[in-house]
Length: 251
Image: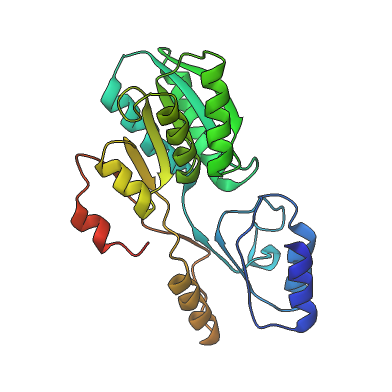
C-alpha cells in the first residue's frame, strides 16, 4: 500500500483514498502526500500515526470515514451479558489480522468483558486472519484436542462460517450447542442468524463510497469536511431480524 501511495503521489493524482490493512507505519508516506498537496481520505480502518493528530498544520490526512470497532465489540459483549447473565461461558476467540483496527477494537471489548465477568473463561485465542479456511482450521484443531467450549467469538463473518462448518462436521449444532457471535452482518450471515446458526451479528457498514464522494465534493467547493465520520451501524439476533430487513439491505 505504501508503494502504491508513492506511485499515486508521483502521478500527481487529485485525491488518495486509503483503506489501510494495518494501523502502523504511515507517518512517512502521509507526510509525503501532504507535502505534495494531495488530500488523503482514509476509510474503514484507522491509522496509528504521530502525524495524524494535533493542530491543523500537523494533520497528515484530510478525513477518516469508518466504523467504531470497539463500539461494535461492546455491543457483542453486552449481548452475551444480557442473554446469559451469571452463566459460565467458555469462550473461543477467533481474532482477525493482528494490528488491524477491527481486531484491536473488538479484542479490547472482549478483554473488558472478561475482566468484569469472572464466570467467563477464555479457553483459546488465535488469529484466523479474517478467513473462512483459517477459522475452520482453528476450530477443527480445538475440537480434536478435546477442548471444552460453549461460545465462539469470531471477529468477522468469514471466520464464523469456517467455525460453523467445523462444528457441523463434528456433529455439533451451531447456535444451540455452541453460541456463535460474529461481526459484519453480510447477507449470508444474516440468513444464518434467521436460521439460528449465528446467534448475534454486529453490522460493519462497508458503504463508504457515497461518503467519500461527499467529502471530495466539499473539498472541491473549498469547504472543510468533518475530520472523523463514524458510519451508522446496528446489530441483529433472531428476535430482531426479519426477511424484509435482509431483503432491504444494500449488501
